[in-house]
Length: 280
Ligand SMILES: C[S@@+](CC[C@H](N)C(=O)[O-])C[C@H]1O[C@@H](n2cnc3c(N)ncnc32)[C@H](O)[C@@H]1O
Image (cartoon, rainbow, N blue to C red; front, side, top):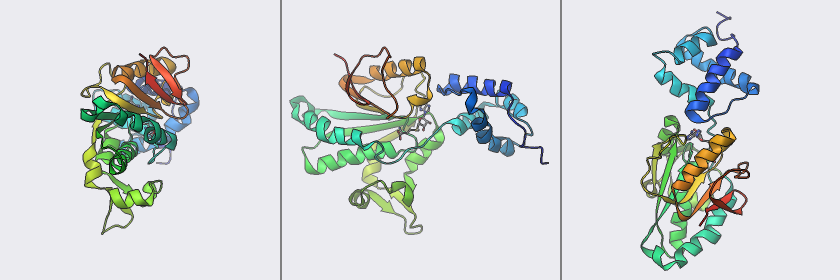
């Protein structure tokens, strides 16, 4: 029995897995990630009662493996996120972007469209919605829609449910928590996104590697933060160009703190660190 799940991942099985997740999700797994992959997939062997990683790779890439291939990608993707992560982007929107938006006369009748691409469990999208709801309380009102997508169905389900542990909302200022969140009576450790906030955000699944993004129309603002970091440079360039095609003229793209467009052939002007505007 002990031998089960102690089996290690051979380099040929690792390479099969790495090639698959690269092709399916753009995730780049270099050889130094082998023990991480082994650790993360061990629970899948256990769940499937398989004794070796070889049996696992045969299963996942065999005729019965379609559902398991979803779990495989889920297990190897990082979903780390939190409310108002990388605060400077929210400050930029509040202090620079939104005042300019309301000053443009044509915008009075327009809807500001925002997309959180690679939204994980929804904290980024709900933060954007809170920022806009707050703006509307104190300034000229803006009609807006927030869309949020991720490759992982599991995180999108959590985002739609809008249930978070108290510790997960600790980055949200108390005044906003009181205004936009509901507290469970049965479980005081659980917080739910309130109906006003939930009604502002539409969640769905979308693979950024797809050739066409099936989201309606184009966007004024795209947040694609801490997603491209797992891709290689050609994939990053391809995805950023696809995102640019989903931006409206003057549209803004926000990347994560360790991502940049340096050296990439993409139609963007740099406004500040990780903040870009569509050229032209
Ligand atoms: C580290 S989280 C970042 C969440 C949020 N944007 C933030 O900055 O806090 C990265 C997310 O990207 C998603 N992701 C990875 N590859 C993707 C792909 N090819 N298409 C869409 N989403 C992807 C993952 O499922 C994960 O939820």
